[in-house]
Amino acid sequence: MAISKENTRPESMARINSKNLAETFISEQVAALKKQIGDGKVLLALSGGVDSSVTAALLIKAIGKNLTCIHVNHGLLRKNEPEQVIKVFKEELGADLIYVDATDRFLDKLKDVSDPETKRKIIGKEFIDVFDEEARKLASDGSYKFLAQGTIYPDILESDGVKAHHNVGGLPEGVTFELVEPVKLLYKDEVRMVGSALGLPDYMVYRQPFPGPGLGVRCTGSITRDRLNALREADYIVREEIGKLKPTPWQYFVTVPDIKSTGIKDGKRIMGWPAVIRCVDTVDAVTATVPEIPYAVLKLITERITKEVSGINRVLYDLSPKPIATIEWE
Ligand code: XMP
Image 1 (spheres, protein in one colour):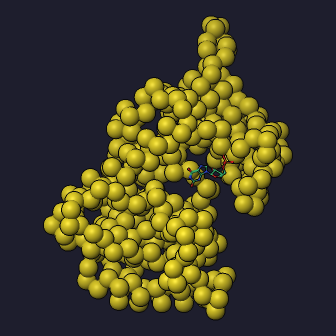
Image 2: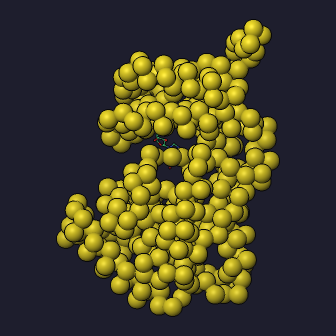
Image 3: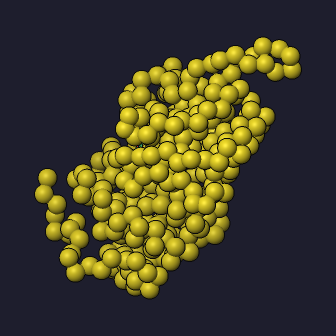
């Protein structure tokens, strides 16, 4: 599909590679948003990822409480993620934020489902349904005219310009939204530069890539609450310890596959899952290499995970490059 003129980055547009240029972009965008939105009201699905976070921060600067953010927790987020979104946006930036903990709903739908594609589809559809339901409650009186999306330029180049994950499905008849996409002509590094200039914390601005279906792709096979909890705790330890390295790998996380092996605890035979550490270096995620991690760090992580995380009795380091292996285990 041809990309429309308004979705094409003008050749004259300078690359935003300094704080000054980011600040200029912010003041121009704030003025443009005020003009587009006036005193209308805007809805935004805030995932906590850098694109939607920067979009939210720009809109808060432009229209304040006339932005309503909806943060849906699908139960597959990393440890502390929803708390961080609430802290930054609600407490620090004073956003009107609706937090929906839909964990039970997602995990019920995913029960006994082991096929990766089916899991992805369920998570994607359920996400849209939950967002729609919240949007419907707010928008049924027609008070929300606008829907904001954290679309960025690579999304436009790679698709038809709409982030399917954030798109709204069957809203009530008569409710149509005008889209607000303030970062749609920016590349990722520019979005980060703007996020920093807006005062967002580094852990949000320089966040690792994280799949939309979240830990769902790292809890392979059918998801159970106990294995998901073990994965979340092990992932936290790995992010904490590997995060101390300089430089940190491009992406680092844990997968807990649906297999058990024997172990010994308090003199008794036990069965437990393995935690697989995955670290990769890459430029574009199309190919990736595996960095050398100091043995002492791997040993410390192994000690911490096997001691602190219930259900895990083995820790492995995945040495496979991409290709042949993908980054996620799925
Ligand atoms: P693979 O596993 O295909 O992953 O080698 C390549 C990169 O893409 C990330 N990934 C996703 N990112 N939504 C995303 O935004 C997704 O559904 C998704 N699935 C994989 C993965 O973490 C890696 O960085």
